[in-house]
Length: 313
Ligand code: RIB
Image (cartoon, rainbow, N blue to C red; front, top):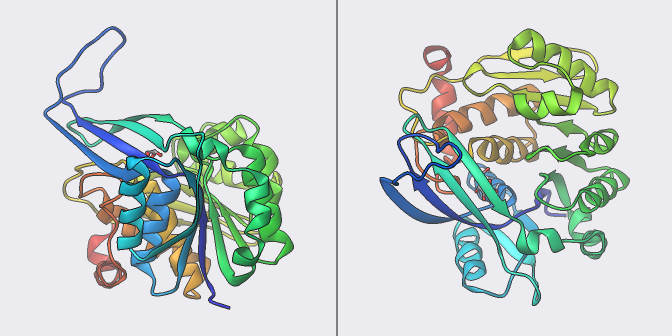
């Protein structure tokens, strides 16, 4: 029993363009900087989790047999993620993403799923032993819905803690909620899942209640710079965000949040303490470029938490 975390999801090769503003239809704009980086919500979460805990972190996903796969897997390994369960498809390329980041750090992302779309429920069944040895299982929605459903069902059958990060929102994702121990939407995703307006704390409270009524055992709604709302069967708690002086790039902040949340839960933290740890990690991530190279180490997160009172918004 290694009591580690298992992240199931996407691996992408990201092409990142820094622009003054996000383009409008028919507009061609120059980029002030261009870079490539490993990415994919699943891979970003796995890397963020691995640097935030000393426990084993495994990833289950699918890539192609191409240079993008080599680039991404080498990065994950360098971050201590076990990649031995990432399958290499002959018939599909590694997923890719085009990310535009504007002067305020806001982003726009286009994803071509590639091999991520080829991760099947059979792959989940084949990984039964890996599920059995893991403590926390974390999914996003860059894999087919039926695969995520199989993953959540297997985690539930084995009595594991299953986190569903419903990003990006997919039509039909509501059906997954009864299988999720913890669901972690941002405002946009919470709104799409519940049909409610989630633009402030009050809206988030209503949406969190609706998510529990739809079957999730616990819900954390992330409100970006406005903090997080945590709802369990017995209480709803608002946690303010950590103060950030300069936002460089918000892409991947949600991934760092979820990876750090999984890490803290593996380490035995309560839901509220894990949420605070995740919130601190995400606040640090937006101060660095790229969605994958921005995750802080466990010691850095703990150091920020130690200055909590001074750093709260
Ligand atoms: O959340 C950021 C990620 O979304 C990027 O790395 C990109 O690959 C897309 O999956």
